[in-house]
Image (cartoon, rainbow, N blue to C red; front, top):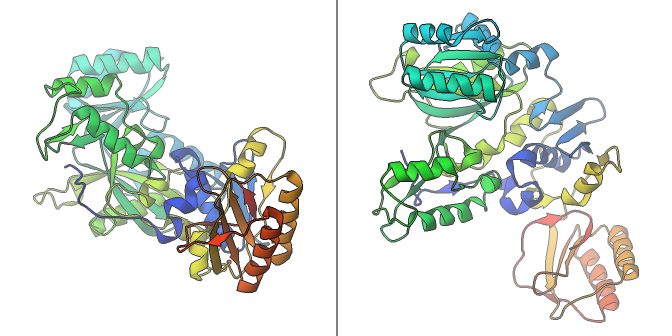
Length: 476
């Protein structure tokens, strides 16, 4: 399967790229989006050390911490269990959830020959991976013979220093990530290895460059670019090409074996097309782990029409700290609103404010992220946004470059606070802009007058509004 550039992409209305710009990248996007959803609802949001990827959310009665997407409601037992692929597999099997046939080895007590013997009994292809790990590190799938198995075993034991490994039967199928909150199926995507599709005119080099430019606009995939490393170079050569070759129009060229979004892979939303039995199995997998409030569920699903039995899929693993961006910002299809589902579940008495003004109201994580990372502060508590959400918006331009003294900035900041006006002054990057939001037009007019006085120049109103609106007073 390849991704057509003609297919439509729709991302969650409340989390458009402009509104989450300061959270771009897989590492911080999950906690940022969860915090943004909670903050817009008027909940108290605190960002914590060491790198502001942990947030604390409170309604005054209930307080929950999130480490990326992992909630503090997870019990220690549940966390230890899902971090062990072996224990997860054993628990799911005991609850009737389909999992691959697997065998564990302690490499300090067993030998390579023991692993080979079991692989021969299972039948190739097989999978070899560490008992603990994430992000696909050290996972070797589709091993076809003893030579490949030996090489993978030696890499795990002697290079990665893994002393506990799992051997599993390899299952063919589509790589699916389901996100479950509580006992509810929320979203599903199919993950595809990095690839390009020829247009009959562009070289492989140019196709990779164009795809990376597109990925940089995606809040989740922006840091998961296709790099021309050893694996990609080998894949291109194996297909009989060089990077200067021009694939024919519509020709699909796989650049990697693994479907890893962080290494350039594509993501296709399948929320509405995944069969009910597969969705229910994902929910059952999470329910089988007591104390697990939410998780990403990795599934291999054989979707061929001839395979409609219950054995057409297996649960590979659970991830309690899953990247929610993979389900929010697919390469193709409709992204799902996971932050809403997560906050709804944890704070059911604090509903989303439905006023459209909140859909693009945001805050600048970068403005305090550095202070947290440097160790200067123990936490940053955000001031909640006003209940009106600044529904009156205006954009102004100034025809010449601006330079504001510290005194002028301070005076304007005080005026913005007094008038309850959100203000962003953009002094760099082309023509200066002034972006304002308030509950009433009079407040904007009064601030505009104060701004004109400080600048000795009257800002001119622009024809169109430019999303988003940042709360507070900012000069960039």
